[in-house]
Image (tube, rainbow, N blue to C red):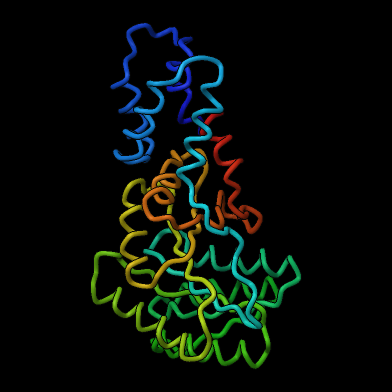
Length: 278
């Protein structure tokens, strides 16, 4: 990604573009989805730096903006219920399957719930992944109430003593109040059967500052505990990760970089910063 190459060059005084000024760097950082507040803070600090320690100094500043909350997925309950939410098109259902594959590979017992009952393709997709992974998928009849499927899956997970139950919910627009209220209902129904260990929000890294708006509203509706950041590849600037963590203090727990089951990994802050400063 290398978002800070020009900034580092300016601070070190090695930039060959003598006409370059701070406003150009500011525009470049804003285009990288960092958000105006964070960009302003970074530039104020950078203007006070000089010399060879610029990279380590900027790294320290960036690291301080990241959440200090745990990034490991909660796993201390007998059955850990993980609810996955997000808007349509972020890769939510695929992320649910990849998370199941990740946990299954670790040797943990996993159960999946296809509570995205409004989209038949999502149920079929999850069932295909379940067959591939050897993981049971709980689903209801076509058009079934999402909350009903979620409740049945909790009951089944407790009976099976599954370590993890991952519940896929219907994708919804974060600016539709009725849909967000329904999501809150699904959460309350789940909690009648078992405590929620995690509420993970899937964010598309290419959506920029809109991803921050999504994180704010979903967090208000269902108390998001962690993020899955998808499409964090060459097409994404990647700055939205910093913006979300700095603003909302919600830790990114996993990242997706492609379509394959292996293109999914725990979020490593140091590797992420390496990419920004490459």
